[in-house]
Length: 190
Image 1 (cartoon, helix red, strand yellow):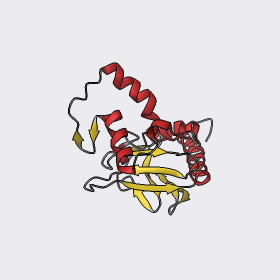
Image 2: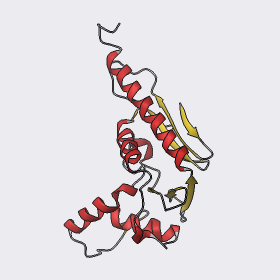
Image 3: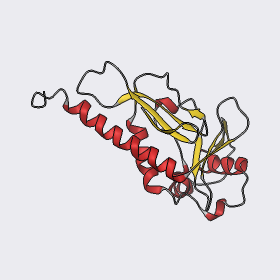
Image 4: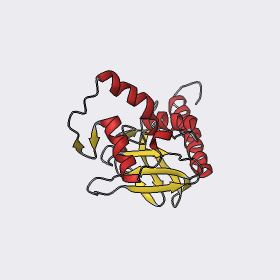
């Protein structure tokens, strides 16, 4: 299933064939932004629930994904700032001790964690590097990603209505799929 438009923003997902019922929603998934694919659609039997949770939280946060202290930063600096605050890294490189306490790291996650996009959202995204999603004022939705093996940041853009619609369509599909996979094998439903 494709929810949205690949050239702008879309979520592509499928249920893995041959699931033994009842089952959780296992399948394959990737996200398209500005024609760029993020996620390994060839990776079978991924749990889609972490992505469902992530997109549920994202739907609630849109269009307010911005903090004024991020203004004026280039895409590269914005990516590095969020990566450092949330993961203590720049891409695959762990940063030297920045002097933050555990409590400070937790506060940073509470403040900036809303920008996390796809990282830890399921096995299909594990090898894709980190991505962040933001909604700067009076601008389209911005996805920043630094794919593995690429030393530059990709800045991908999509309209708010397209992103919102794709997310809501995926959430409905997931919920319908979860209900079908959990009830189909019940004797009272057959």
